[in-house]
View 1 (cartoon, rainbow, N blue to C red):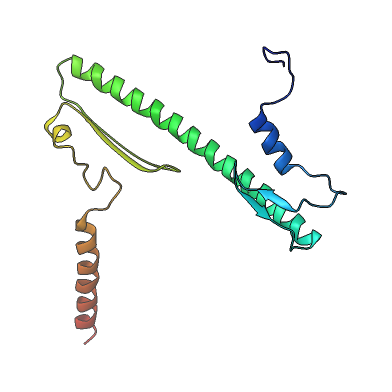
View 2: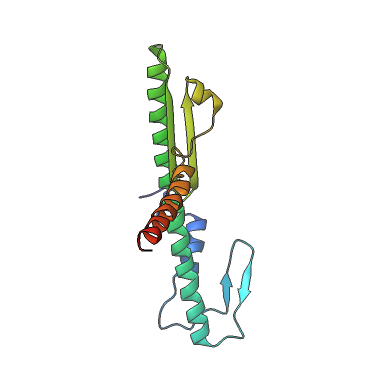
Length: 160
């Protein structure tokens, strides 16, 4: 595909990155590694094998970074779609005059997102409950040890 000036070549940024990551296997590795637009790492004190290994790790790092960027972009898009749908549904329900509370909690590569929206008193407070955030209530934390203690004391008393 050609650009307006009739050139089929990629932009200078694309060329720089492809030059930086591509290297013929039979050619000796370069003596410098371009770390960014203005930073170079001098590799002259390293053997050819060390330079090749460093270039390989550098390329692997670029691949991993691009994968993370793509994952984050997908997560951002998915979160935007989810929030758009939730807010549209909330608006539609509120338009009927009904009170509505919508809670949504999501963990992704972006971190944890907690959303509470609506027209109800709970939504206006703006705090998610333990259940809505995925936390457990303190009821189980108290009841389980208490039950174990009671059963243990009952068993001890029964065998005396």
